[in-house]
Length: 255
Image (cartoon, rainbow, N blue to C red):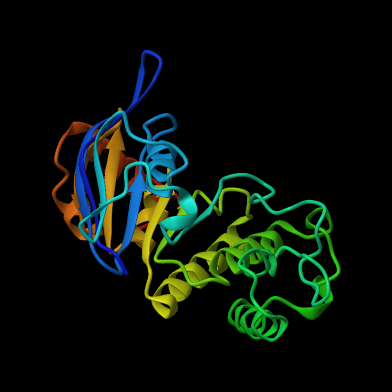
């Protein structure tokens, strides 16, 4: 799975600089979490990696190969978008062996044979605990936790080289969110992908990330392990982020 390198990447929308001269390295098979406040450039970064938009300046490299201008379908990237519907197709069932469905869609699009589709969907269903009685349902008939599992299934039925997740747990209640975090971490380990995960929640970043990048105004203020960021914040903004995280622990657990 690829190592991702960003070299001076900048993206503007009119007068707004969403990503500002970003230079970073995301290691092969790493679970890399980007954390920061709303509007800091996190989602724009994911869209740049996915090829949904192109940088105005700089280069994006996957294993040394320049990705600028390469369309999403040729990057081996799968993305789960932020939002209550997880970008599931509202008119399609969860799964059907005979018809286009949410889980089979990527495989049918590639022209895979019915036997291959059935085998790959079955592996995903078993891995994520997607139940057969969900199969005939449309997304509107699923709970938030069920939609999240189906979205993970659709994104990984073709094993991605790079897995991008844009605050996928933001609409789950706390127990479902905790369970989903465990599933995402386990899924990352099983697939061996390079994963980039965006959140505004530092606690979630520390729980999931091999390394964490704290982002503000389109730049990474600090990149390091959760322990490095907790113990040695790089500046006042990161220190305040960590202080708020610790205060949250005290309120929740009295520690």
